[in-house]
Figure 1 (cartoon, helix red, strand yellow):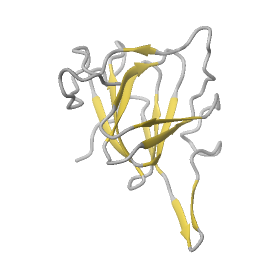
Figure 2 (figure 1 turned 180 degrees about the vertical axis):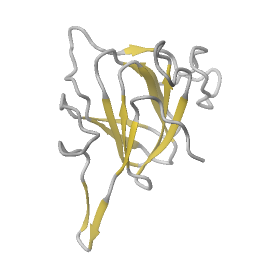
Figure 3 (figure 1 turned 90 degrees about the vertical axis):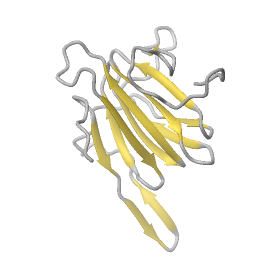
Figure 4 (figure 1 turned 45 degrees about the vertical axis):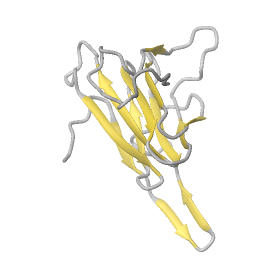
Length: 159
């Protein structure tokens, strides 16, 4: 069943080119309509069952793709003036579903490794990380402010 995407969120199915030597997958190109600008590139990972959530940015757009394992990415639109306020999106990405997700500023997001081994996401945000004034604001994964259940075990430390 198709879900209504949060305003500003875009998904781009990635193409994997395979031959007898291996494979190649382009992650981002400036001539794609999902591209905005380049700030930096980094890799983040999660171990099986680990949740890294919730956070959002005030200025930065994120562009996630999972290059190893499988991740469940959840997004929540809490923006006051958004036509999709209150909507939650859930997207499964990874080796078996190579998708690039564009995440707008002020949209809460997080991810959970849903496989049996460590999973890795490459993020291409529009802004470089500012060590003096980080554009990152956090809520715990089990916050009551976001109507989403990560399936966490009570009493265990997550994210």
